[in-house]
Length: 156
Image (cartoon, rainbow, N blue to C red; front, side, top):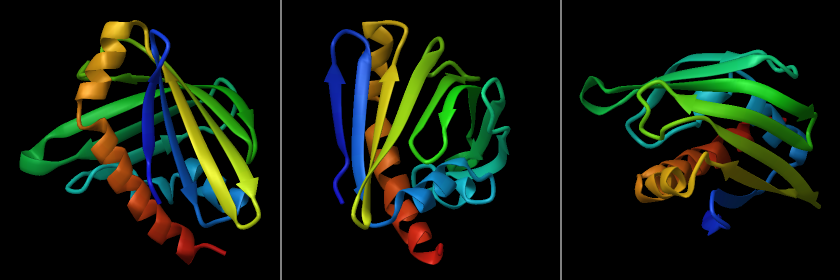
């Protein structure tokens, strides 16, 4: 499956990817702290701490380690949760590789046995959005989603 990434307007970035899985399994992979570390991140990176308090107002936090002992941590607050349909949350990074707090909206649209995940990220400014676009984010998301394909085949 192909990941598409597109800048929209002044501050938004939209990522779209389809999966050969029902919506309920994709939702589980996005929200279960046992499943997220199995797929999220670029090759060479591993989530070593995954905290998910899946409720509106609840917090999430991921800490990952990567090549050469690098560490990356980010987290946020869940703003809206419609199980198996929509997830809205804030996101900020401890090391400020992307300055400020962004707002992410993930929607899951099921068509037969396939589900399309659309992630819209609204950054605090065009400059911050463009920094994210120039980063290896698209490669990392693509590699993570490829691993997610494999994880989804193990779920029933």
